[in-house]
Image (cartoon, rainbow, N blue to C red):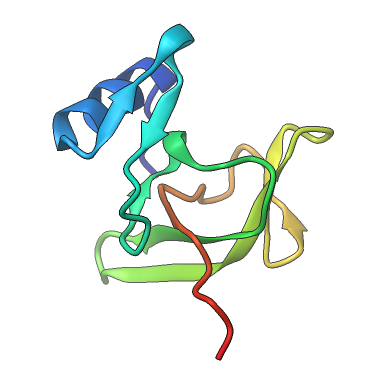
Length: 99
């Protein structure tokens, strides 16, 4: 599992060119939300799609809905509170509009 610091995540987001770093180091995602964005730019007040590579050897990945729980200071992914040793989401995307 790859874990990077918030500062490195901010630098990566800035290098991608579709984020701006606002006051206080806040990552402001581009308005183009129909693509995967770095997890450090994820909103913390809504349910979103979360993605992570779960096994680099096989290329297996996981995508499911989830949200950030400030009370537990962790992601809630598929209804489960992620522990520090669990695979953490690395990217996010807004949920599509319902049909």
